Figure 1 (cartoon, helix red, strand yellow):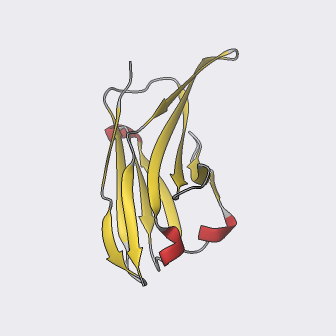
Figure 2: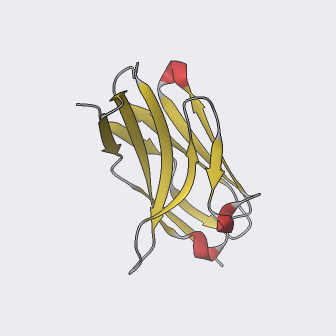
Length: 120
């Protein structure tokens, strides 16, 4: 069972930056994609950024140009660099790992979540 451990959340003023990290507890050898999601108070959990095994990235429109997702395969870790933070970015951020071991077998793993609070 793969466990994901997140770190890097906290309180920051608007315009500031934070870097989130999410590390897998073991080496991932299969095809895998990473993603960052967030869930604000009373809202659904939405995708923020995603990165495939070949490094292709995708972002929610609300964070394009401000957030950058990256991965370090040697460390089994994904990062989310968040710049120019806004109060509306306040949420619990979750990392997600999707591991595909065969065309019909996929496993989804979630981190425990880390709180990001942006003050105005």
